[in-house]
Image (cartoon, rainbow, N blue to C red; front, side):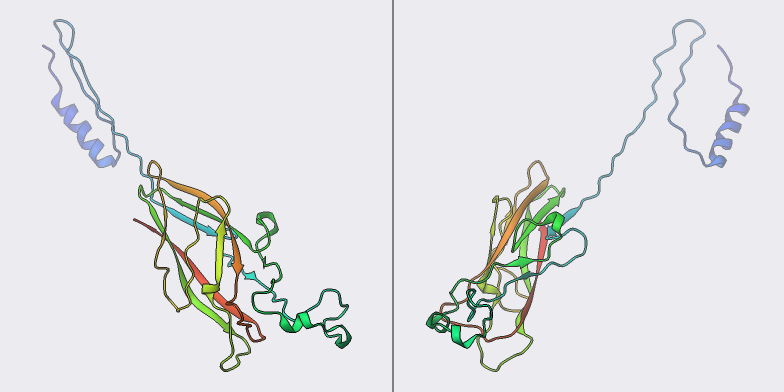
Length: 227
């Protein structure tokens, strides 16, 4: 039988340890009198995929979009000037908060624009679980020119319809920092949530409640949570 030079073998192992290199596993089999036994060398594989969630409402990146309505109370499109006294009509006097409003607009980028008052929505997650989508009130409508005791719009008067039933819109509430009572559940398929939709917002004031003149601003934060 062949004799191994142990001093050479030990020197090689020491050199490998000092070099800091990592070698694959190696096996050895020999037989001076016939066929050697099978020899094996194992290799392990590892793939790491980070868990990620993505939520888009409106434009991508860090732009916050604004959906805006310009209330049409008291105007007459047939007049060259809405302040023309000679053109005043009884219809203007009788107009209520439920009268048609001007079409909502949004400042979504032209390349993404889905339509006036509509924002594109997208949700993605590879967490292997369903997702909850909630809407949290950052601030309810506040007038820039407040009038004590006057009627003003509220977030609960805004609803949103979804175009393709992929991502429902959570209820909006008036109280600051309050979340919708019933979150929208996005179902994972084979561990992945990957859905898109378009939300079209509608402002419907309470019947007979005409908001006082002024500019009103509110903000809502949408949040995805993995279950």
